[in-house]
Image (cartoon, rainbow, N blue to C red; front, top):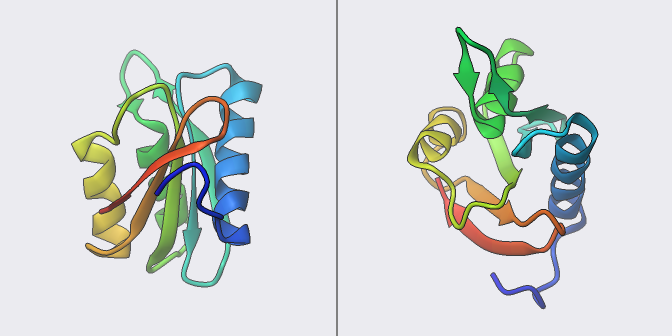
Length: 116
């Protein structure tokens, strides 16, 4: 996906939520996922001494804990160039292999879309 490609409004929403969470919580990454009913779950990086989760892993875990049975899409706002394998695996576990994962920079511009 290029920066000039229009984003679906629901995809733009999860990117905006992920970006807001990253900024509000001053964490390296923010993420949001949308489940099969359209509900969204938002999270930041968890960096405790005894627990480390990426923002996207945390958002997926929140969806599962809230009863989601599938995902429609995921977004992560990060300075990284690509989603990490663990993030893609978490999204794939809940959403399936075709679930889109939007990768945006801190400016909110989507740099790529990867299928989980």
